[in-house]
Every structure is written in C-alpha cells, then in structure tokens.
Length: 420
Image (cartoon, rainbow, N blue to C red; front, side):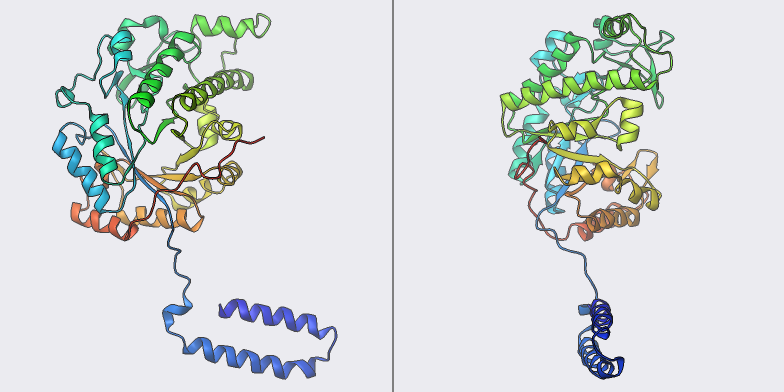
C-alpha cells in the first residue's frame, strides 16, 4: 500500500510540476508523505503484507487409480479414504473406470466386446466400485468425475488385444508394441468406426447408469504420433490425399494434422453424445501441455477448447523445476483457455519410485493460486501420504495447511459458452 501511494505521489508531482513551480509543491508533498508514512508504520506489521487470497471456490482434486495403489480393492478402505479426503477439505475425485483393458465397474458393453464385464482383480469381484464411490463420495460432499485412464491404450497381452487384433494400429515398421516403462502396450485404432463405437458405448453406459458429475479424458484418449500406419488408416489417408501415402516421418506436419483432426472429430461426437445423454454431465480433459499433447499424442486440446467441446481443463504440469513449472502456466493457449473455461493444474504428488517433498507441492499450489487458476488436482491418491519418504502424519498436516478450510467446488458450467 505504501509503495503504491509513493508511486502515486511521484506521478502527481510530475503532473503538477508542469503547472506550478517545484518550490511551491515540494513542501505539501513532503507533508503528505510524512503523514501517510506515520500512519502506515503505526499499523501492525502483518497489515502491511499482501496475504494470499482465500478462494471462494476452488477445485481440490485427486486421481484414484488401480495402478500402484490398492485404495479401490477393499470397500472399507475405499470408504475410509474418501472420508479422509473430506476431512482434509478436498472436494473432487477422479476415479479410474477403464484400465488395463478392462472396466472397473460391471459393464455389459465390455462383456460383449471383451468377454469379461469386470477387471478380474480379486478385490473388485462382487462389487460395483463406481457406485460405491458415487454414493459415499456424494455423502461426503465430493464431486465425482470418472476418469478413462487408459483411453485407447491396452496391455499387449490383454483379452481385448487378443480378441480384437484387427482393432489395433501399428508403427511404420509394422510393430504394434509401444513401451510404457517396463510394460508392453498396444493401441486401439481411434480412426476405426467400430473402435470409436465401443469407446463411446462405454462412456454412455457410465453417464446413463451412474449419478456422476462429469467424465474425464486425458492424452490416452488419442494416439501416440508414432502410430497410425496400419492398413486401414493408410488406406483412409490415401483416399483423402489423392492416393498419396502418409510420410514415414511420424512428425510430418500434414500427417500429424490429419490424424489430430480425425481425433478432434471423434471428440465432437463424444461431447454431443454425452450432452444428449445427460445435459449437466461435465466434460473434462486432463492433458499434458499443448505442444507435447499435439506433437506426441495428436491431442489438440487447444482446438477442443476453442470449439467448445470441453468444459473443464486440468492441465498436467508434472515438473520439479519451479521455473519450468511456472513457464508452463504462462503459455498463450493456457491464458486463452482461462478466459473461456475453468482451468486447473495437475500437480505431481509422487510416483511409486519417486517421492515429491511437501514443500515443493505447497510452493506449486501457491504459484497456481497466484495466477488465479480454478484449482489444483494431485496425481495420485497413494502418493498424497501413503507412498512418500515423509511420514503420513507430516504429509496430512501439510495438506491441511494447503486446504485449511472447506470451500465449494466451482460451478464449472456457470457462464460457460462455446466460442462462436
């Protein structure tokens, strides 16, 4: 406050000096500054500090998965975990519902296509964890947005891959295997109508049968740019390019653009279908920053946002370097999205073999708040406090400092409208 006042006085002095002599103005300005300085110094010290704003509403989320985590595999454990999230003033959960080539809820669509209606993990049998999460989550005041974690991806040895080999796409050398860490993955071809219909049917099944608040996709709801060289896709490309085959260079601009646009067309269909099924079901996307998403996963979320086919963006900014983290928040496409829809930031809380210090988490949350994003979400539940070098109690105290009081989940649909 004092700094702003002094700056104002200097500006006022410069303006007035054009009209009056320096001598006639100097004395009153000195008097004013002296009085104000005396008043400011008489205030308590903390009154002079610009404290962080307390948000009226804020997305405070966490992703729940069955990878490196057992939170979903026992009813009481799941219930206790949701209760703890409520106590620590979280308000949003993103439970995985499609992973490892299986649904994590009993699915008639999956039973017909895959041959199993549910992931075979013992802890999931005889249960409908999505119904449990919705029921308990809503009792605890949590917003529940199921997450299609694997998207078009599946394990290479999954029933889905074995039963529907014609649905898989490949690299230019003909191989279908894509390594993800130590795992062999394959990808369903997102350009084939029958694949699109299967994924869309899974989505509609969830939206129609569960009292969910939204549904979320990420980069896996697209395709690694090294893929797309299967016979079906090559023939389709040739048909639309006067017989010319796609470039062997997977980063060729036209080849990237064509595939990304095809995925965008599918996203349009999915959005319209979700809204036709349940109008107030929020369509959320949690991608990597635009350049990575587009170049390496053909996911043009910038275009999706401008087309009005996503209503909530949770940008994955998993960076340890604080300067890099902050630079990702400043890109033009991020600022444009913030002016149109609520944009939150995904923060890494840790991985199985990587512990992230609470100090880093708290600092990143503050940087997000300083820039007036809609909120934060953490990847992933198990690393909040169960999987860390720091003690669970210390971690929970740390999150209590981040979220000291409850706040409402943002009304993400209020005022939202597509670009014209």
